[in-house]
Image 1 (cartoon, rainbow, N blue to C red):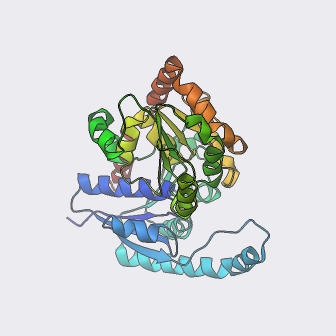
Image 2 (image 1 turned 60 degrees about the vertical axis):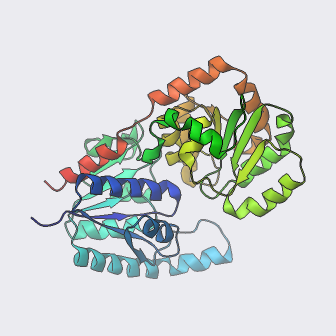
Length: 369
C-alpha cells in the first residue's frame, strides 16, 4: 500500500500556522506512515515555526496585494504578477514531485497558488477557514475545493453549503484538563495565596494599543490581590521592561511570549485578548471568561466579527481598540462580579469544539476514499 501523503499550505500568522501544525500532528497520530509536506511563503513566520515542529516546509516567493498607498507598497504590487506566476510554477513542480493524495489550505499567501495548481492537477483539496468572515483567497479557492471546514455558523454566506462542515478550529492539545495543572502553574508564575489572575494576550507578536492602554490604567492594580500576567510581544519587551522598572508594581509579570500557555490558562480568572480565530477557539475550549479587543488592522474587520460570535451569546465582553485605557478598570469590576464571570465562562465553554482537529482530519482522510 502506498503512503498517504498530504500537502498543507498557508501561514503568515500564528492563527494559520498553529491550526496547520495541529492538523499535521493528528494525521500522523492516526496514520504513523503518513507523509506531510508544508508549503509556505518565503520570509514569513511559517518558515521558522514549521521546522521547529519537525516538519519539512518548502517556501514560495509569493506576496499579497498591498492595500496601502506607500511607495514601498506600490513597488510590491508592481512585482505581484511576476511573483504570482513564479509561485504557481513552483507550486506545480512541488506537487508533481511530492504527488500528494490531498492538499489542505489553511489560509495565507502560499495557499492560493498551491491549491490552484492542485485543482489543475486533479488533486482533491480541502480548505480550513478559521474566521467568521472568509478571506478573498479562500472564497476564490472554494469554487473547486471538495470540503470546507469552518468554525462558525452561517458560513454559507461565502461558500456552497453542501461543501461546508462545521468542525471548529484546531487548537493545541495541552489546553485539555487544565484543572490538573493549577498547582504547577501557581509555582511557575509565582502566584500568591488568594491572588486573582488576569492574563493579557495581544497575539503572538503583541499588541501596541493593548500594551499602551494597560500602562495608562495600571494604577488600578496597586495594592490589589491580583496578579497580571502580560504577554507584551517580542518587539515591545525592552520598552515594557523599562516602563515596569520605573513603576513599583510587583504584581505585574511581563513576558515577550508565554511558552506554557496551558499553565497560564489554567490559573486565569479573566483573560484580556485580541479576537483572532485561534484565540477565540482556545478561550471557548478552556471555558475562560474574557474581554476581547479586536484588532482594527485586519482585513474585513474579521476580528470584530469573531468577537461578536461570543459577545452575542454572553460568552465574552467587548472593548474597542480605542478604549484600551478602560481595560484594567473593566477587568477589576468583572473580577468582583463572580456571578457574571461564571455565566460568561459557562457560555464560552458551550461554544467550544474539543474534537475539531479529529473532525477535520476525518474529512481529509475521506477525500482519499
